[in-house]
Length: 156
Image (cartoon, rainbow, N blue to C red; front, side, top):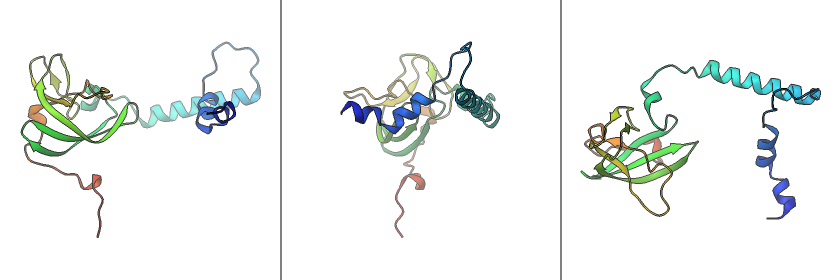
């Protein structure tokens, strides 16, 4: 990639322009003041619309992840839909039953997981998946094959 292409990348330009201005910078230009004010308004609006109320999701290790069990090929395996804007997206990820080697929280329900509990984890491969530390309690895993209509293409 050429230097011109790197500097013309719209995403990088946007990210660079959104960097916060350090406090105590003397005599900011009017455009910088307007940008800072706009960012503060966005932050306040976000906090207003997304209160930090205690909820089961707040106990989850990946609180923003959308986690759905797509199917259960066997009693020891599951196919999971995992989507998290902050980490990764796996539309059809294999998970296997194992024993928890650390305490944690269930990615599906937020329930506490203790070392030694039976859990499902993403199948290990190379490279290691971004959600490799995630766990789902075996007790929280649906018994029968499930399939969410939102995840399938619907052809009429």
